[in-house]
Length: 159
Image (tube, rainbow, N blue to C red; front, side, top):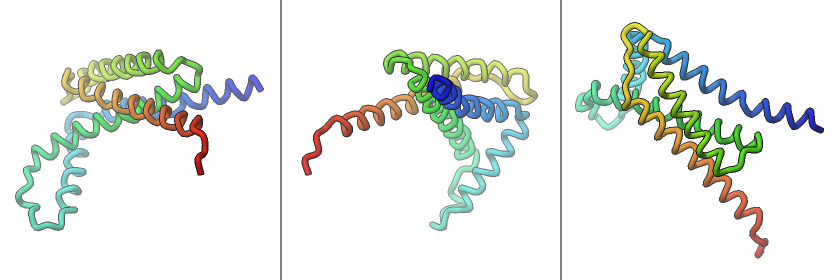
């Protein structure tokens, strides 16, 4: 039984590691490769419009938004996976929220420092802020989900 619990605790950290590896891989791309990838996605978004307004879209602004939404989304997932791993590992919820957010902020900060070593990339404090907000949103959503689950579980069935 103890072995199962230890395996389960280790297993819940795999998504955290996977998120970090994906973020690190994206950050390891040169500025040119990274920009080309986001431009391709931006073009797909524009081409998917059926309202006849494709020409009215400012590609540069939309590409900027796509890049920042990607930051937010990746760290949203990181926040979700970290808070889950901490909770399953037995960290009290209030501490797991703080620890999870701090881990995400530290990772975001280290990721921006890492980008300074990549050709065509640089570090931006704004990206750390966006990353941190994404992580915070993921952590809060998890916390709300747990609260709703416990509420439903403890409420008497009135049917």
